[in-house]
Length: 428
Picture (tube, rainbow, N blue to C red):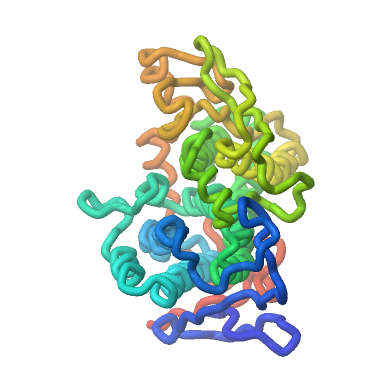
């Protein structure tokens, strides 16, 4: 695989071919900031900790374990995708994402081993014991126990679920525990590529679908049968996949109102997205934040103490970040001349955690009963037939410069190389 293997003196990545069995992980941290102080909570303005503060030891360890558990989980979910890669370019990106997620696990294990003694070593061992989707020892968070059966799922995962990872890492990068902050700040530089893979991957699927429809003279993108006959993924099915992965990712933020989040903030352990850029007192003792809640059968915004609504605020930041990709995808569709828009579903739709876990709602946020949900959910979420159709497209393409029929080549390659570059050399 052609990948970055080191950096030059100016900090730019150096690329070359590396055999997968020879790939090695390193412990990489952002440079230490001189005289860094804790930027929020009860310890606001105090010097950042270089060692674990005893009173916050258990809370810190728990947050590191949860973050660490997600890293190998995604690799486990994606481990079969190399068999059906739509190009060498995509195969290279899959491997790059996987080895970096493995390194992120290594980074969290480093913190557990170095700073948490025997408890940390035991927790690190458990990170290897759990397996994504395992009936007896599943991963800790629901989205990381879901299957990633095809490449459209992979692109959705790296766009939506890795973006949750970005938000969580940004929050932990604010931490008063400096080794955690420095570790997460470096991880964010790698996470950006994962989301790039997702956003451009979906763009390329949408682009190819629009090109195929236009060439075939299809005017209605909702004519699923005709579009699928062209060997591309129809836009309504892309919307269903989007609905699924976005809502699974929303659940990763936890309950909208959370005393655990408040305690972590007060303790100076986990801050907000771009904490140092927010203009307030960074203590939140007397502040409020609007939360969507179910009130007398209606979804309404209710002001709650800002300290207990940190999950909601981070989720709102996440949603705003997600919208940027949809604007780009919809631009591709409108430029091709089609009246179809990909949209984010309402936050009450298809939820397993939080305020709306016990109700059903349409993607537009209309509350519905169980019978209506069971009758119509196939309109909004991928069905078995949808999955079977996408699976039928997953035929591996390993020729240099060749791409599967359902996805367009990238506009720009990796490391300024063209899309038809031999990104992966496969030994026979």
